[in-house]
Image 1 (cartoon, rainbow, N blue to C red):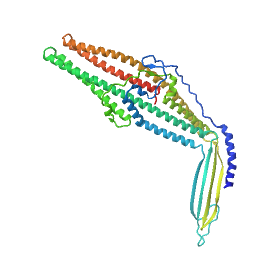
Image 2 (cartoon, rainbow, N blue to C red):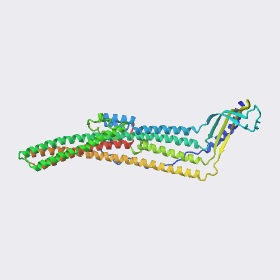
Image 3 (tube, rainbow, N blue to C red):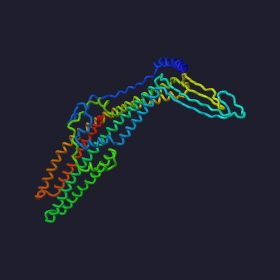
Image 4 (cartoon, helix red, strand yellow):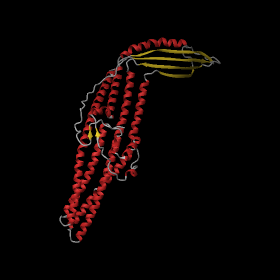
Length: 477
């Protein structure tokens, strides 16, 4: 055995020296510079509720001060099926990275072989005569270990491992993106649910008022103080108001089901939790947005695109190393024996060790085209990264404009709603006193209902824009 180890050192020593010498020629990861013009600031930040302070996005949904919303998002982050799929993809990507990294190390295996042959002896031993009492069957026994190590002279294995690690990082960023989208979708649906419930209450109140008005007009008609036309108009107003309720019920039902599925439960599973109407969540008193350059480090989709570009560059480097020779060290050690007619022949140890070189001479353009294909993939990844960054800037600007302008609309509608309420009250008083006809009352009632519904819709829309702004800024956990 000592002689075996000495022989292996004799072969391995020069090979390792050669490895250290050629490693200096290793291919380095290619570099592709992507230049994206980053604005120095946001164009739409002047307005109520927005500041340029660094964005505070950790658990951003808590800024709406709604315990049920926080509970729903926490449950969704734990049970949403899209998130669980993304987690499984991370496990897959990390395992693939481990496979790629394992190629950097020697592979050691063990094997055992037992054969029974009839009709002759292998390894040059002559046939056994068919003599009486002598079997022409032989047995071959072999057991041993073998090792193989591909020497990464030109960095191909290292670059392949780097590409796999970057793919795993991209999968991790994709998970954060799914978490962000899930939290934003839960918040949006919850806000729409509460908004629809608020609108339903307004419609129900207006239905009660329209019913009382219809009864009043009928009483006046029977007393000869109103015309049949007034009764017809009051009836039409009542039916029109009732018709506004079913669409709101459909929205409420749909949001119930969607929220249940997003938290990983069957539809209608959250009915007990969400059936009772509650006010809309509070608007955050102030949303700090920071600077555009902050998005490059904060948004998970940008970080994912960056990781995918790094992986594509590493794969390009792997393709470039295919132009160079492949060096490997192989070794084997074991024991073998042959038996015939009950006698053991050729028993003893064996070993084999030596280098293996594979040089690409002619591949029909495969290597060249593979490099060109990988280079095209790098270009695509670079363009996707640039597009992702530009889209991020656009989404923040759009959410900022929507949030600020909707705030202006909400304040105007709040003032209009108060005026409409007063106008409806005065119209009813004057109609009861015979100073106005019923048309004035109907117009005032329609205006009051429309203004109240629009105010709730505007409040809901501004909350949706706030959620979109948090999402565009990159969220946080």
